[in-house]
Structures are given as C-alpha cells and as structure tokens.
Image 1 (cartoon, rainbow, N blue to C red):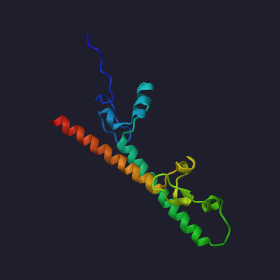
Image 2: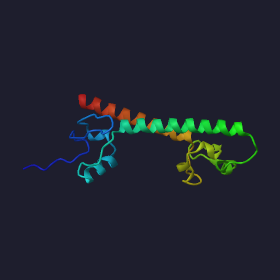
Image 3: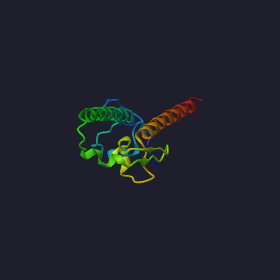
Image 4: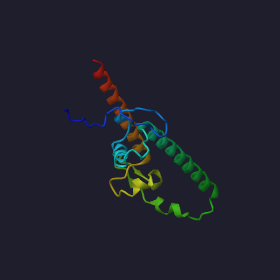
Length: 149
C-alpha cells in the first residue's frame, strides 16, 4: 500500500467561487486560502489569485478616485479652516523604499501605522505589487517550460 501524496499543487476539486473556473491546481490559490479551505472541510469559498488581484486593483482605483475627489473638494473650499484629515499632513514621513520625504497624504493608513522607517509610499507599494506579479508569472512560465522539456 502506498502513502498518499499531500501537496498544494494537486489538481483536485479546487474551484474559484468568483470566476467559477473549475479543477484548478493549488498554486492558483494562496497558501492561506487553501489552509482555510481544508480546515473548514471544504465549506470555505476559495478565491483564486487572479480574482484577488483584480479585486485589489479595483479597490486601488476606487481609492485613487476618492483621493482625487477629496483633493479637488479641499482646494475648492479655500475657507482657511483646517479639516480633521489635514492635521497630520504637515509632518513629512520618509519612505522606506525610495527614501523620499513625503507628506502623509502620499501613504496608505496601514503603511503609516507601521511606524518610522518602515512605511512605504503608495507608488512604492504599487510598484512592489507589480514586480511580485511579474516574478510570479515568470516563475510559472519557467516551470511550464521545464515540464515541457
């Protein structure tokens, strides 16, 4: 009798609950999502990395449009009164990646909460996300090329 093979790459019944793709390999999902799925006895809905990335990009675009709208509203007011959101905008914060001193309005709240020397500006975070996606795609293409040989 052989021992069962346990791997994240098993092409089993992994289905994305958003795009409805079926029989996906485990590498299409994050490790954390697969762990939750297995712990909940297959009752936790799975969302593939592609759907998660699309949702994140939509959220970033929505946040950018809200920032632009807020900036245009604040510039139109011009009444000299300080908003509650503008209180911390006077002290510049140094970005951990690009080392530029930028106003807090150039950072996400989660990055500012990390503290001095660890916060990254929005452009650096978006650049890191893009690089990570590119490396992941290149790695996957490399594995496919090796398998074909």
